[in-house]
Length: 351
Image (tube, rainbow, N blue to C red; front, side):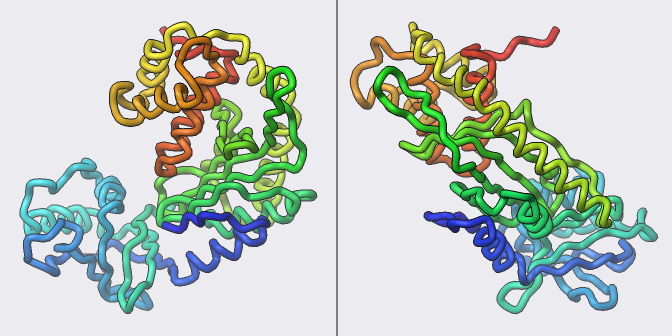
C-alpha cells in the first residue's frame, strides 16, 4: 500500500502518485472457458499461494498469481461463499472453481491484472457489466473543476483495492471555546475501488488543523455506483464532484456550529458513553485496545472529570488517525455522525 507520510502538496501531485502506482496494470476481457484454476504449489502454504489461474485468451498473461485479500471477490464472482476452501485441500478447491467456470463457459469476464517482478497478479475478476471508473479518471475529472487545483491533499492512501484522498479547502473556521482558537477546514473525502471492493463515493469532511484529526459526514455522501465512459458521463462526474464540494462548503457553518456546541455538552460517564458509541456503530469492543486508548487520550491532559463531548470526539478522531485506513474512516464517520446529530451518541433505532 502507498500511504505517504507527507501527502503531495497538490491534487496534481496525487494524480502523479496514482499514475505511478497503477502504471503496470492491464485489463483483459476473457471468456470463462479460457480460464482454469490449477494447483501451482502443493507445499503447505496459504491457499492463494498454492493455486494459480491459467488463461488461454489471446494477449492475456498465460498464468496469473492470486492475492490473499482478493480471494473473497473471486469466490463471490463465481457464486461461492467468502470463506469457501478454508479447510479444503487445494485440489478440491480448484475442482469446485473450475466446475463453476465450466457452467458459465460462454460468459465474459473483466480480468484486471498487475504486472510485478516478472509475473502477473490478479487484481480482480469482474462481470462484464462492471463499469470501469479508474482512480486516474476520477482525479483527472476533479482537476478540471474550477478551483479544484487549490484544494490541498491532507490524507492519501493507495492500495490494490482502494484509493482514499482527503482534500481540504483553504478557508477555515474557528471551533474553539472562548479565547482558545481551534481551526478546522472543510473538504471532501474521495473513495474509489478499481477491483469491485466498493463504489466511488464522495463525502463531506472537516479537517482539524492542530492535530490533523478528521471528521467524515457519511449522510452527505454521494454514491456513484454506475458509470459509463462517454463524454456525457465525464460531464456528469464533474458535476457531481462539484456538487459535493459546494455542499461541503455551503454546509460548513451549520456543521461547525454543531461541532463547537459540543463544548457545552458535559461528558457525565466517559466509560458508558464510549461503550454506547462503539457498540451502536459496531466499532468493536469498548474494552479492547482501541477503546482503552480512547479513554487514555481523553485523560492525557488531566483526569476525566469535567470533560465534554467535544473532548470525546477529539479523543476518538485522535486514536482513529493511528489506525489503518478502513478502521480510521469508520471511526471518523461515527464521530462525524455524532457531530451532525448534535451530540446524539447512539443513532436512533429503526423500528
